[in-house]
Length: 517
Ligand code: GAP
View 1 (cartoon, rainbow, N blue to C red):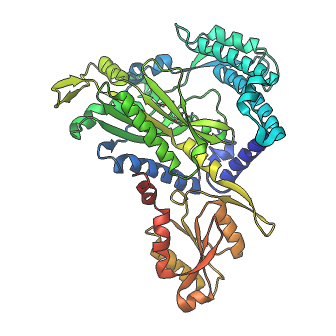
View 2: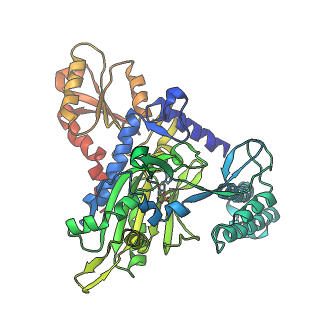
View 3: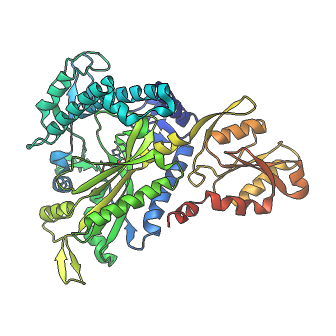
């Protein structure tokens, strides 16, 4: 575990050192859980967005995109339930003055029991080797049974307080924290306040006070911008059910516990798609979108074993099915995307609050009804983090040296080709620029002439550039260059005129998209 934490720390510093992610307002020592993307980060992020956008809008005849404003009429959030119910239960430690999410403290306690069980299993596995029978060990080992019992009891109590009839049972939550003897990680004490609900939406004011300013919110999800535009898009696009509306944009949440770098931020970006369907077909569509979205993730080649579904036990009152796609981060399996069957809740609520009829006239059945919705919702920043975590490697080389390399999927890499003149003379820089000028229209190229070639390769490995080309004396004679592959480090001599055809297909988003069909 400690080793994984170490790796994660290294990834965070790597992101800063190589221009991927900086703390926001860095010169003022940063702002909590807000980050800026640097020169390489923005390219990677744009590529992730493009991969998602094109997989939705380009590959589906019945999905279109929109770009709604961040500010929305305040009634939107009353209708959606966010004003009344977008809350987290928080608790303060009186000694450290630190604030925590009470549900997170309890979930971490459950994870501790799971970790203890896992440690026993790993120890026994080492001891018994091939003869090890995990099921039997789990059923008989006293320490495992004891921790499993503790876990089950806690899980049961947690479910009860979270699903209490009148909403979350806040007193019950505090009692669990006290009974489990959970301490504040800073002060080490159990001097806790009561648990209170805390609304996560950021508020601001629109208009000057003299005009009668009104309170508006920074949207906590992009989905509502899609719901309020359902009629506009359906009518102007003459859309027939089933159809989807996709959107990428910023969302804001005043997270109480903002940790793990860009995993939980206060300003982040979502890629959401609402798929409008006939009522009664939702569970089939839910299954279909689960499969489609998992395929999109696994298409990046990170290995199926690094993904899993986590079906929700506790459903929001408007949902009749929900699952998360989780990715194996250095700090465990964590949610990257949510897929929700949201019934007709949102459209019905907006119809009620706006007084507008928000329905679909089905020409096949001659009926009007409020469509049901399947939502797929993924965080750009979490996707970014999962890609960085999986791609980062400190590699031991056969010659005893080490290199830090990002094995980014070539189609997502910020820079696709780096071109180096071997020396700064004999017309080599000019030749290298000529190559770049020819290829820059097809993919992102970078010119580098500083330091020896070995150092230049290392810098490119560190930003995940899949290909490097070196212009040398022979180039000037026969128009060939050495082409070096980031992952294998193999070099081969190729004609300049073949570079585009060798590289373009491997680094294009289109090549990723084709594998989805
Ligand atoms: N419209 C549904 C919705 O917003 P959600 O599960 O709250 O559902 C969807 O969020 C996705 O947005 C999550 O799976 C995650 O990837 C991302 N996300 C949510 N909160 C985030 C935060 N504070 N920082 C970064 N990403 C976040």
